[in-house]
Length: 126
Image (cartoon, rainbow, N blue to C red):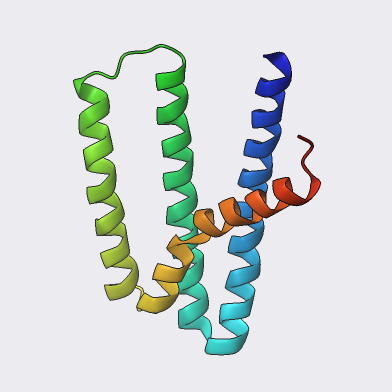
């Protein structure tokens, strides 16, 4: 069981690093290829996605620790999506960021999970 917990901790730390790396690299590429609005959109989208990923990790961790989810947790989970939607609106309307780049930036955790899966399929031991 200890070995399994260590495996998941290593994978999770790689995921956090991948989210940061893909967010940074994507920002530089978007900025260089499509301009500063795309770069800012991607950066802010990746940042919102990273925060959401962290919140999801904390929520799952609390469920795994045997804590029963209360009404407060349900309200916070619901408000999280409202806050993320409001942040997306402000990013596009106020900052003038590129909407497509923002949406692509929001998919950074998904890309990190795919990279981690390929890594485990390639280098993992059964």
